Amino acid sequence: MSRRRRAAVLLGLALVLGGLAASDVARRESAVRAQLGPAVQVVVARSDLRAGRPVAAADLALRQVPARYAPVGAATLPETLLGQRLAVPVARGGYLGAAMIATEPEVAGPPVRRGERAAEVVALGARSLVVPGARVDVLVTRGGEGGAAAGTELALEDVEVLAARVAPPAARAEAGERVAATLRVSVRDAVFLAAAQSFARELRLLPRAAGDDERAGQIVVGEGLR
Image: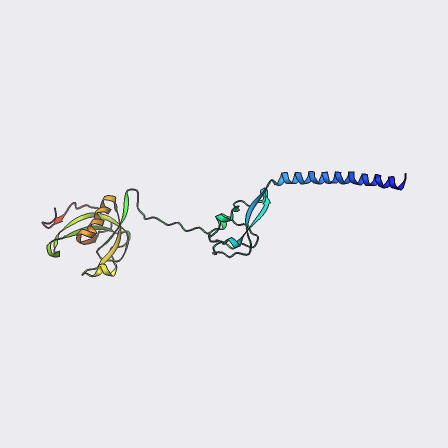
């Protein structure tokens, strides 16, 4: 066999072997891609980020990773993270997602049940006795001619005090100790107390003895009250 023919045979054999190798590599890559699944885009930190800082666009980068290796909860859109504060530090290249974002503490609502309201009043009362958890009666004194008292009625009985504090200075101008209290009442009574703050000359809270749930019923003193 001539040298030229031998070279042609070797070249042909090399091409065949190269084609087989390339086919095998392509087959293996296809098998690996099938195992890994399609690539997905995830958001990562462009640099080290400290906890508590708001996330800016310059802090974020995108990375393509196989779907099976993408962390659960990793963000795929940078826009969902912008302006949010980080709850934990994130190292450069670390994945970012909702789990790393600080959440606002839940705001507790007033401790009232369905059909009840927390009514705010400023009234005469002993601050040392009108305390959270105490029970009080509410007296309402209406104003008469010339600012004189027209009469007093027992408006509410056995009302629970949810909160109490010293009344603001403007409410303590008149004689007597005054307290700003939050009372647990019905919707109807809450409306009455709101109105009484305007039309009444004075509101007074009378602390009740512990365990005393006896009702006195309607008591009115003064001809101006009916």
